[in-house]
Every structure is written in C-alpha cells, then in structure tokens.
Length: 128
Length: 262
Ligand code: SF4
Ligand code: SF4
Ligand code: SF4
Ligand code: SF4
Image: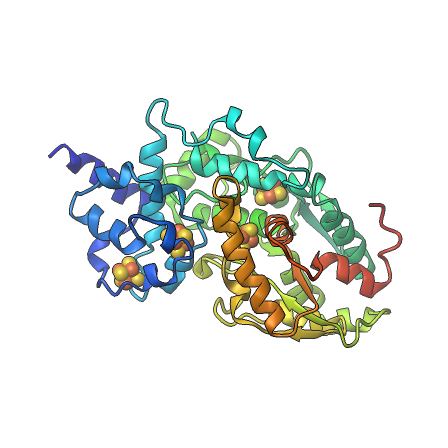
C-alpha cells in the first residue's frame, strides 16, 4: 500500500503513537464537535493506525475540529488525538489547489464585529 | 517594573479596549507594558505539526525580541498567549524544530529562554492579587460575575501550565480581588466554537449558547473573557447579559477607566 509513506508522515508530523490508545472513547465523548463529525477523534487514531487514511482526508470532519485541545488534555493515555486530526488536515490542504477556505469566500462571512483573529485563525486551519 | 508586551492584531483593531485598559491598569499597578517593535500577527492558532516552521517564525521573533530586552513577554489575548507559549515550548523541547528555526533566523540561537506570562498570570504571580486588592478604588461589590476561560487559556495544560485545567481559579480569584462575586459554572472551560464561526455559525451558536445558558443558570449577571473571539461568539449568539474584557473591569476597579480613550 502506498499509504505506508503517508501513514509514517502523519505519525512523524503529529508525534502521536496510536498504539498507546486503549479505545476508551473519552476523547470523542468530550469533543465539542462530536455531533458534526463523520469520523470522531478516537476513529482518527484507530484509522490512521490501520492505514485507513483516505476516508479521513476526504472527510469534512477535518474542518469541524475546533482545536480546543479537550481531547489532548482528557485522554487518559496521552495519545493527543487533536494532533493527528491536525496532521491529516494538513495532508489534505497541502495538496495543490485543495485549500478549504479561499480568500474570495471571506467577505460574505464577515460582519461589522468580526475580530481579525477569527479570519487569521480560519486561514491558518483551513488553507496553505 | 517594565515588561515586553505583545498586543496582537485584534487588540489594535476590534479589541482596542482590551489593549487600552490593559495598559492603563498595569500602569496603575506599577507595571509598564512596553510594546515590542515591529511585531507581527501570531496567526491566532498554533499548528501542532512539528514540520510547520514558517508559520511559527513571527512568534519566535517576538520571543527573541523580549529576550534581547531581558524582559518577560506579556500577552493579553488568550489566543496570542496560547500560540506564543506553545511556540516557546516547541523551541525548548524539540531540538530539530529549534534548529530549523535558528538556521532560518540566522541570529544567536534561541532555545525558549523567554518567560511568557498571560496578563492574568502577571497579576497573580508578579503583582499579586493581594496587591491588586489594595489598589482597588471602585469595588464592584455584589456584582455576580462569571469567568469564561474557554479553551485556549488553559489547554494544553502540559504547555500552558497556567492553572488546573479542569478546576481553574485564576479568573475567579481575579474577580474576588476586584471586590465582586465569582460565579462558578460547568461550561466555563468548554469551547465557544472558536474559528468555526466562520464557516459553521450554527455550531458556534450551539456551543456559545450552552456557555451563556449555563452561566446564567448559575446566577451570572456578567461574563468576563480575555479572548476577542470568545467575546464575539458569545455576543453574536445572543448573550443577554454583558460580556466584557476582564481588563475593562480591572481598569474600572482601579479607577483608571475614564482616562482610556476608546
Ligand atoms: S481518549 Fe485516548 S485512549 Fe481513549 S480512545 Fe481517545 S485516544 Fe484512545
Ligand atoms: S481538539 Fe478537535 S477533535 Fe479534539 S476535542 Fe477539540 S474539537 Fe474535538
Ligand atoms: S491571536 Fe490574536 S490578536 Fe493575537 S496576534 Fe494573533 S491573531 Fe492577532
Ligand atoms: S473558547 Fe473559543 S474563542 Fe475562546 S479561546 Fe476557545 S476557541 Fe478561543
């Protein structure tokens, strides 16, 4: 499987060792974006471990994660699933032309009170 | 004393009050916030991937500027603080990453020597809440205030090391120091939705409403925050009690709010 290289890349970028996971599901239970996600934090861990990466790369779940670090702090095994979600999201948006948020989409998303922070944060997470 | 200060882009635009009040209040407490020169936006969120280097350089430059001034670096916005502390931690702990950064910067190597404080930590650890209390001229007695931590102030705890991430007290101690009553509620450290407000406003609404309802049910008459995005999300999503920056209340309590130009 040519997934091997991608899998190694994700593990190296994130520093996550999925073998530490004991499948307790606490990360997903605490995730504020749970209802909106097709794949949940614990599934990112097990699917990357199994090399089942393509469905994650193509899933909208990547853009539902809030980077709130709740799963990082509350995982009893120190797996830090958010770092894996981030690595998969980067693998997705780093592809040519795959930016999830494009500058010409932004004006319609703003109102008079939008803080600058919101725009820069969204760009950092969704685009390269 | 003088400390290096990183205001961040939002504090120069939509969150001007957060900045003005922070400087005035610090001055009243004997601390001068010296803005570092030519700072750049930190990017608002830290990228945890260790092979992301370029996006972290602006934060490293700020940290190096503070080191050169031989001062600790103080930030007020929760998000800036999170990015800068996580970047500093990466410079301290990830040799390979630090090496790449240092080769790019081409200056004297930096390895995370700068002490980074959130403004609240400055109040607690440097000024001291007791000293704050002594300087209060307008006690906000009887006012029931809920602290909203959100996520970025406390997490990831291994790096932020600010407070107990599940049972924090720093903002409640701040509220008590300025003479008000602190309302403790479950959702104070749950996310408001953050940047998801950009493309999934419904999700931000759901998360923000949960915070507002929970705070009100606990008796809150006001919510304080350190994060412009928290404030935006809570207000936009129907907060019917005031949501204000903690620095505004501090300036009011210290009697310097009026000197602040809005
Ligand atoms: S909380 Fe940690 S150990 Fe439990 S399922 Fe999630 S990643 Fe695995
Ligand atoms: S960091 Fe992302 S995946 Fe983890 S709990 Fe928060 S929203 Fe869910
Ligand atoms: S988090 Fe905030 S205000 Fe702070 S510099 Fe960065 S984006 Fe701008
Ligand atoms: S709660 Fe929301 S806006 Fe606030 S710190 Fe977290 S993401 Fe930022």
